[in-house]
Image (cartoon, rainbow, N blue to C red; front, side):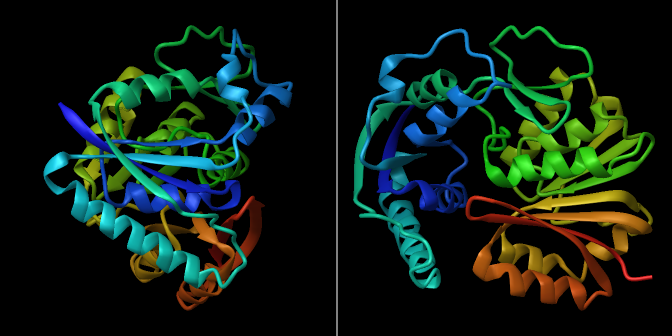
Length: 315
């Protein structure tokens, strides 16, 4: 199948914001080409490379963010994407430089973007013990490591994004063996799978995107955790009797705020709530929404332009 590849020229600091907008408009993949990311990984002594193509680290002026659209509605979706990107640029009030936002389109064969993704994705070490490993790479597990295997051609969530890595780090700090975990907006299933492998007794994963649900089920299967993980196609858990020791939601600030009245019914009184996917100017929105539910902020984390918040009940 052929796709229309939409490429937007932006900056390192705005690239994840642009990518998030694209993910809201396509299930067919998003790729960020930023030489700064690769150079940072090369300098990271905890990341091991078999090889790296010279072209990957060649100087680039812009960060290129690409998404893949079906031809029949590509123009309409591209228009919506660019409109939303410019809206977010205005909302940033100059705090984030979005660059030129030049856009280009071209027709490509359907599997091209998968090859690009495979070329750039290598094992990622997150926190004390979690390693995210692509399914097509042989990786020798080290003592104490927890390996989360992710397949290609599936929904987003690889551990590279700052919001995901912060969640993984916080989960390693908060999770206790035998805990019940809930992941709202599970994407590829990476967080719920990590929780299961870290010792959770059962994990409940929900998402409104059927592609994400399919991806999560597939990745649960290849990680051997399907019997301990329940994946549901829903906005949030419909069963208020299911309560988590740890609830994690890595979405966007606006969606988090909308979910605030619903999330606490599934959080135990002694539980921990981890929220991520928040940019600086949206922190008041999220804080206000969850504090209104009687929750107290326990911790704030920050990576790049992104923030994560940890909440517990105000006893």
